[in-house]
Amino acid sequence: MSEKMTSEEKDAEIKRLTKQIMDSQPKEVPHRNVKKEGQLYFGPYVPLCKVHDSLLRGLLKRGETLTPGDRNSTLAGHLTDQRGYTKEDKEWFIKEFKPYVNWYIDGAMEWSGLKFDPNQHTTSFTLIDLWINYMKEHEYNPEHTHGGQLSWVIFLKTPNVEEEQKAYKGTATPPGSIAFHYGEPQHPKWADHTFNYQPQEGYMWVFPAQLRHQVMPFHTEGTRISVSGNLFLNPPGSPDAVSDKYDHYTQDRI
Image (cartoon, rainbow, N blue to C red):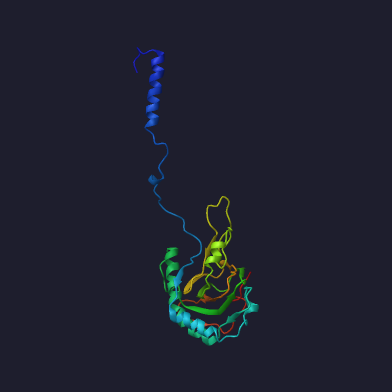
């Protein structure tokens, strides 16, 4: 800037240089230039899988021979027909279910960033309960947890509630859906604490027994048939087993 410039010319030059500097700066830092270096993963490991047909058919066929409603007094469901499988059924089930326990443990170890150590970890388990639900229209399962360490729900038959779901305009869990709840609602809502799923035939969720969940009623004519159960993991090297009786650890808690 020349000393021969008048004060007006100096002011004008300063404004020009200031504008030039400001124009050369980005209006904001583009988010695509921000590189994520890591992320915090936590919470329960809850995978979904397809179940092979022989297990589905076996559970359905064996369920038809059981006593209707014999488990109504020990489960949380507002259902008229919940049936407990026999010990013979459970002995058959643990052999069929073993690959799914192995699959869950493998996934959980990877999720947790751990390496399987046979001296510390196990895929051996004791089945402590197994039952089948025949859920009709207007019936439901309130929010509850299970006993044991691991639980599951296998959907054998599901009525078509697509039109009912389309008609629902609310903000809560849609009709007929199962909802898993973890943690507490946050404001502002930085994270969801509820996951909703519309059951599909032949699929299974496996989840920690203490994870809160519920099943909403549907009002379309039909029956949803599902199988749930609980297990404890055994010490390393122990054989798979079936408990002789179910106790307070196996009953649903609201």
